Image (cartoon, rainbow, N blue to C red; front, top):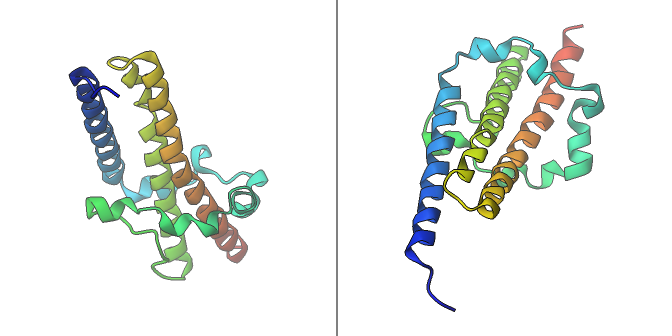
Length: 161
């Protein structure tokens, strides 16, 4: 097997650095948004009835068995709200946790958006691999945020009645 040519190695290095830049840029951007933005109810972040308070994510993806293995971005950026465990059990604590799941979900949706840019310097097939990477890397985090928020929303809604 011949060694990788310089242009292939160069392109792979550009891809790695570009993804690192986009992930960090989007994360920092979302961290700069005030908590109040994520505390308010919006159509973008609502929990749908079909999600059954997060139960659908557990049934389809067995979220509880793998969610603990995902790296929380706060560990990497040394900033933000760690979501590995609850920071309290009061209704206000749960609402803040739910808001931070909205922030994390938004971060991961926005991290998918730059994927088409990789078609600019990659061959078509590699551009599609970058799209696949963006979805496959971010989707587990989105699923976990929706799972956790569905469970928290069920609690906060039942106690506010």
